Image 1: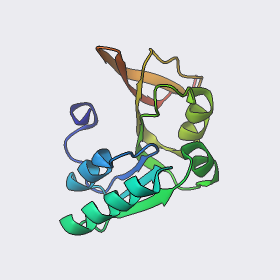
Image 2: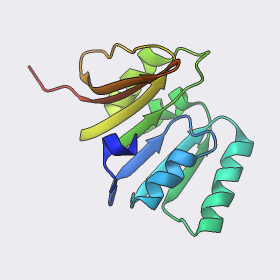
Image 3: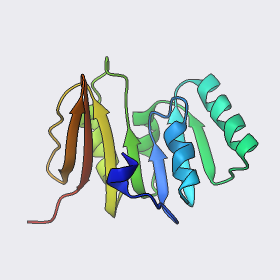
Image 4: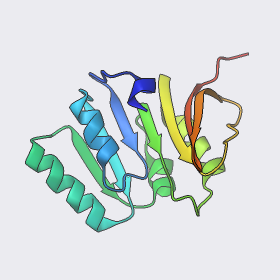
Length: 146
């Protein structure tokens, strides 16, 4: 995925809506992100992420415990990179695409993992797609205006 995004994220603002262990958030910080926001509904995972960031001396991190869709609906900042890897048993893509498209910077990218090929709505287009086993990887960008 970072091969698709580029190795250097210096100055970027990233958002991980389903942070889990926070590995993508920490990796974005290690690649120079100015701010990496992580959201997960599991308080223990967010606490572990905060502890790991502190132990690594990372201060460009912001964490939130909560539902990704609810949090994103309230957020007003835009992000250069958004990571979305919801549990495969859920299917939040319609609402998730709507919220992510609103939060994506004009030249931003949305990295999405799903158990199926995703069809983005108008306003987003697939830049790259790959599949490994049952996982579909997508890199999306704001669609060019008609």
